[in-house]
Picture (cartoon, rainbow, N blue to C red):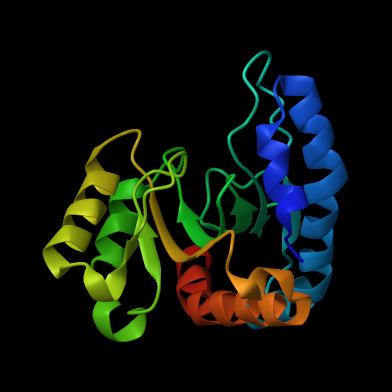
Amino acid sequence: MFTTKQFDVFKQDGLESRMTGIRSHIQPLFHRIYDEVGPQLEADVGVPLYLHVAKHARRTVNPPKDTWMAICHDKRGYKKHPHLQVGLFDDRVFVWLAFIYEMPNKQAIAKRLETLDFKSEFADFHVAGDHMKKDAFLIEETSEASITTLLERFGNVKKADFLIGRQLQADASILQNESAFLALVEDTFGRLTPLYRDLIL
């Protein structure tokens, strides 16, 4: 599904040339992913869901370093709500349940997330604290104190995010196998759906 063609888009210099590559080589994959996983995800969540594909419309000079699709219950926008993402940087693909800094109720969300047993429920997942950076930490290799620090920062620092899900390096063989990758997305979203549903309903 993802090949060097998609990752090479981020080697394109200039906003227009990179956006052309994103529209041609990456966004069609986002629509395919949504067509495959969207119906079951909507059934599991129990409310209508909508696809939002990043337009990078605010950019006027600097080309984007990553791009993504977001699935959310709000047709008008996703950034103020928990949302599910699939996207990529130049060297990895990410599959996240994302809570980003534009959410108005971050402290309450952080408190709810602090009740999770990350080590037992999501040991094979990654967590991250900034959706604009690649840095992510495998939960089974991360101390509970470090996860708590990430959550406290998310709740208390205006520009902080919290993301949980999976990251896959560009050379991971599963990325080239469409059915296997879609199964991984379905598994990731399926395990995160109860949390997502709990936080939006």
